[in-house]
Length: 522
Image (cartoon, rainbow, N blue to C red; front, side, top):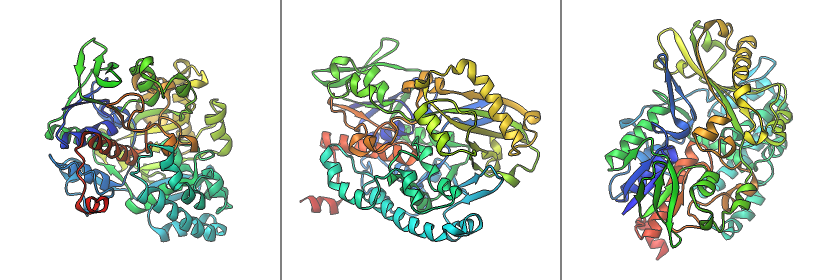
């Protein structure tokens, strides 16, 4: 039985590995000349840059994936209990980071965010002692949301409204459907603490002002499993996934863009490439953007549920401007900066409204500054650093002309890092720079309107309301990745792959349950 997977992002590769372990013949088709999707690597002049995700959490999910073997797809248990990363270490080396992030405020102060409760309390006491008691209440309530929303429901595929209604009373009781920033404001008075404990939804494309408070669970996901870095960059993790897939007999074809998903009598039967080549399959898994999959890869007559009207009303996440740059080291970069840095602007709510609601390019901006050579110097030539700075911007529904704006915005973004003192003298030390804009996401990654994270995770695009991992329109078509359930972020796309593989195993009669679950079902 043959499965075709469209796209070699982390979600596509993870799904392909699980299907190959189930005994299917797996072919991954990738439009570009290498794997990774958003997690591609850019190399130039001796520098290595991760182009996309750099925050690795829940390494147990990777351990579960790398431990798969033929006849053992490891679809259960949901949360692996194995200690250590002995399987992962065969493919990639992960190192824990401390702090997870250094959050910088415009007044020159900063907050070091990690998983040490006493350290977090000390940081709050140092910057906002009036919020100590509020954090204790936040910690209690966020942990309850984490336990219900992640540990208990994390791998639940919400295939119907009934699935959501069964858990809705619990979510309402936990106040998990209130907007995240509004939830955080209940506990913290200090504007700095309100930002510290709400910004993380931006890492998955969500506006803290509008996503539901269920995303406070990110705080405990990171406190439970930490934040890690793959030595060699996220690209080294992608290379490990490719190696694992090939060990299980799976194949990848690069520079093989898909033009159309073929159907026959309402069932997916293969794909046609842009070259005109037809490839037959018994099932198809799309790791591509939601609107692209349904709006471009399927014929209109195949779309009864996901018609144009539904695609047009989909609220998309913001996009990104990312500058990749190499510069001569001065030796003091580690004094003010850490591996992951969040540089906040004077405005917070107004800036978010500009980006997400008004869809205008603000004069000010916030940065996520990634400086991995503080951890792994091999990513740059001796005496140099490789870095990227990421700025949230509106998607291409804004009408902004990035062909004109891009070069000027690059100069402005790097100039800010220099002038604000984060990287003093950067413009004189700069030896390489490259950038991507929403146009890259739209035309290179086939992401509708250049969105960076798929449908925005607002309440009405969460759980049952988020695109499902099994198509309602076409039998034998399955979906995986950030556009689908449960959502964006590396842990979520790996969860998505496991959920999708389970649905396929169930539909093909290949589902193998642990003995305890078999007895419970009996």
